Length: 607
Image (tube, rainbow, N blue to C red; front, side, top):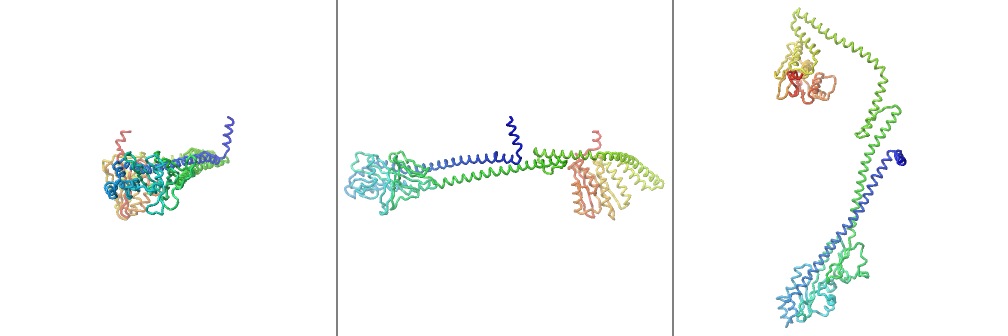
C-alpha cells in the first residue's frame, strides 16, 4: 500500500507537460505503431498468399487448356481406330494407284482432313502404314526407313500403350534447313485383330503456336515451361519452337527425377495422371515484378495508414492537451497573484468543461473578494451617504406634496380672474391644463381604454389649438367598437405631442393632424398623421434604427417611450411603422392584435 502511494506521489511530482508527453508516447503513438506493424505483417502474408493462390489458378487454367487439347486428340484417335471401314481400306491391297485414288477421293480424303478444321489447335493429322500399295500424299504415308528411325516411331514401339504423347525434333517441311519442335499424339490402329496385316499409326500434331499463345496469356502472372517425360524443355513463355539453335534442351534433375535449379516459389505440377501423359510436367515461375508491385502497394498503403493514424490523433491530442495545459497554467499564474493580494480576473474564453467551470468559479471568487474589500473600505462613507440620502428623501417628499397643491392653487386663482373678466377661451384652456395635470398625477394604471386615451389627447390638442389659433386643425376618426379596448397610456398623446413639437412647429401655413383608431380584421390600427415638414429617408432610417437598437441619445423621447411600452406589453407581436415625405407629411401607425388586448368590461370581471 505504501509503495502504491509512493508511486502516485512520484507521478504527482512530474510537470504537467511531461505527463502529457508520456501519455502521448506510451498510450497513443507506441500502440498505433505496434498495431500498424502487426497489420502490415499480416496483410503482407495475406497478399502473398492471395497472389500465390492466383498463380495456382493460372497454372490450373493452362493445365486444363493443354489437357483439353490432348484429350481431344485422344478422342479423335479412338474414333478413327474404332472405324472398321476406314481400317479395312488401310488394310486393302490396291492393284494400282488408280484403284487407290478412287478410294482416296471417295472416302479417305475427307476422313482425316475434317479434324483440323473442327479443332483449331490441331496442325496436322495423318496415318503411317506399312501397306506398300498406298501412295504417299495428303494425310497418308507409307513407312519409310527414315520414319522407322524417327523419335516418335521409336517411342511408340518402346511403349506397350496404344496411345502416347511425345515431343521430338523434326525438319520443318516449309524450310528443310530449319528444325521444328513437335508435340504429337500417336495412336496404334489395332482395334481389330483380323486387320493386323499391316502396321498402322495415327499421328496428331498439336499446333505449337497455340500453346505459345496460351502461355503468353499468363505472362503477367507466370513464366510457364512445358517439360516432357524425358525432362526436356518443350516450350516456354516467349520462347521459340523452331530454329537452327538447339531445341528441346534437357533440364537438370535430382536423383529422384525432380527438377532442380528453379527459382524460389516456382510451381511444378504434373499435367495429368493418364498413362499417355506420364511424367509430363508444367512449371510455373512467378513474375517477380507482379509480386513486387503488390508488396509495394501494401507498403504504400500502410505508410499512408500509419501517417494518417498518427498525424490526425497527434493534432487532436495537441489541441486538447494545449487547451487543458494553457488554461491550467493561466489559473496557476493568477493563483500566485492572489497570494500577493492581487485579485485580477482571468480574461479569456473559459470553455464549458470542468476547467471552464473552475475558471468561472475563480473569477466569481475574486470578484466577490474585491467587492468585499470595497465594501469594507467604503463602509464609513456609505453610512454618511445614507444619512444624507435620508434627509434628501424627506425634503423631496415634502416638496412633492407642496408643488402640486401650489400649482393647482395658482391655476384656480388664474381661473377666478379669467371668469371675473370673462376670458372664455382662457378659461377652457386652463381647465384642460388642470385636468391634464391632475390625470398625470393620479393616472396610476399602465393600461387605459382607447376612450380615455383619446379624451386625454383631445384636451392636449385643444391647448395646442389655442396656441396656433386658426392655423391649426385636428380630426379624430374613431371606430366605436374599439373604444373600450385597453392600450398602454399615452400611446396616442405622445405621438400627437411629437407631431406638434417636431412636425408642425416650423410650418408657416395651416397645420393639420389626423388621428384614426379603427378595427382592421383581427387587429386594431392607431394612426397619427400630420402635414409637417417631414424628413428625408436617411433621417427616417436613423430614427427607426435607434428605436430598434434601444439607443438613448436624448432625442425622440416620445417615440422611444411609445415603442418601449409596446415591446413591454406585446413583445414583437405589435407593429410600429413610420412613413415620411419631406415638406408633405409624416405618419406613425401602430398595429396591435386584438387577441392581445381586452376590453374594460372583461378586466372588471377578472378583478
